[in-house]
Amino acid sequence: MVGHLLQYHPGFEKLKQICQAGTLGWVQYVYSHRLNLGKIRTEENILWSFAPHDISLILVLLGDDVETVSATGHSYLSHDVPDVTTTHIQFADSRAAHVFVSWLHPFKEQRLVVVGDESMAVFDDLRG
Image 1 (cartoon, rainbow, N blue to C red):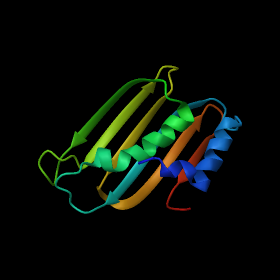
Image 2 (image 1 turned 90 degrees about the vertical axis):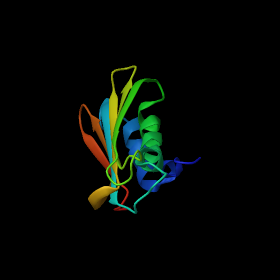
Image 3 (image 1 turned 180 degrees about the vertical axis):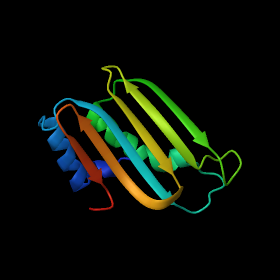
């Protein structure tokens, strides 16, 4: 269950219920930001460190019928160790998601936004 512990967070469980009940309408798009000014790493990159948490939540909300995934990363502090990445996920049913992770951000943010055709909802992991 590495990277999946947030699936059991009460806030995410409520978000999942809201989505399943159709409160937001057809969920079209999900995006997440997991940002922080973290310690300098020389071996572990940001994609493998931060993004699995958000990707697991996105897969619960949108399903696992992923069509394409693309990721772009940039290394600023350690050569060949990405500090910032943006990942785009396209699902077979035309829904999409993106994940922005960085440990070169001046403010801590851990937010997942779900966009439906009728409403939106936010899971802010820092607010509890």
